[in-house]
Image (cartoon, rainbow, N blue to C red; front, side, top):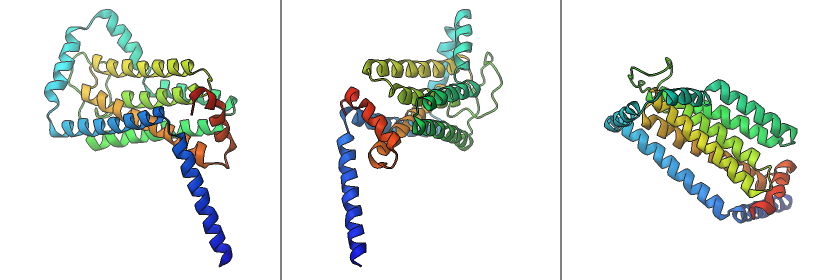
Length: 253
């Protein structure tokens, strides 16, 4: 009995220590990311409710009509190229390439989290499309013949998950904060372009794309949160702690 009491007390002390360390890890940037995730989650729920209520049609059609009026031959070419950056094949290549770079840099946990994030993001996209089952826009100039449902935009959601997660994990390898900021900016700028291109080519409503962006932001921040928690609680995974220590001076955490 005495042995069990000592074990319980030791476990409680360890949990308190980990909790204190996790609280210490919380910086202003972390709090901002959590706030952004909450806003994105609320945004997704709000857009979904509007779509289910059938009140988004006027807004959706107005945006698509505006894009139609501003179509240009050179924009058609650019949009076609940009939208391909969000298809499944391209994202798979990006994921595997980033995984290879992270593995070569001995960031094994980062590789596992990247793969889990992308795979679960794809499953989430499939499930959401099946649940909402929204028909695609009936646009005469729409390119291609998409087979999946319209809501949410898979290109928008999965590009946010893939490029956002890659930018986060690869950016953490840089000690210079400016490099990480540029990496993040480039990744999310590309995500915005891909989502916009889906509306321009006529295969998605604006609300589809908005929901995809919101969902992708939530999923990416969730991945980042898992990584941070592992860094505090998983003492048995030295690599995670080492990665945290490597960037401690650069982040000011």
